[in-house]
Length: 262
Image (cartoon, rainbow, N blue to C red; front, side, top):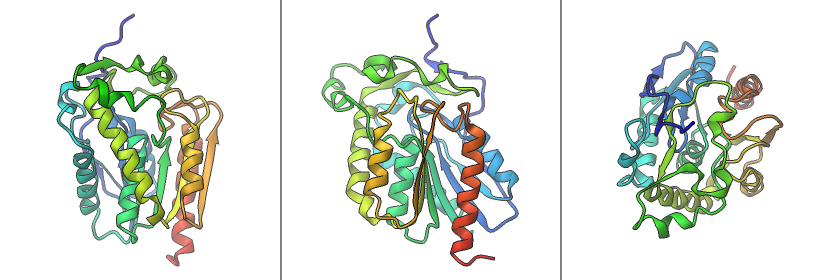
């Protein structure tokens, strides 16, 4: 059965803010072609712990694939930057993101040393064949997600919770994602905050070895990489989500306690 261009359009994937009752805030960013539906279950869990959570919809997402064509990686970053402003005034602030959202989180941490910690869910730093996009983009605007070998099976086939987003990609946006990857690798030496990385071993959307690469390159003194045996790319919706939730909360609480917050 052929997949629709936009998966689960009936769900609400717009920007949302969940205010908490503790001085802890989390900027939580969704991934490439997805919407905030992707991060809502985790956001609601963190909010139940008392944290304030802000999840912005990134430019070009949640409407139609063609809207991603004119978007630059700087536009995604600007939206993430504005998200920090929404949480301004919260003393213990963390940045977190799924896939491309993880890359944006790293850039924010590199530019804002006061951010307490960074949480990466299957960060999209290494995608086999992504270099093709910039050469194909002038000739082909939109392609199915399986145009790259590693995406032969959609991540939605193994997710345990509904995912919303495009089942096709705008090649111009893929080329921007590659530029974002390169910018992160240029800036990673500036990330000294505590970092927690989750990576599914069954990931077929990105190359899982990218998480190991980031772990090795990060200068952070406190960093961890958790491999999820049964999860694919979208670890924030997949079958080991309970592990992701609990380890995320433990990381936040431990990071805050080590910084001297009572």
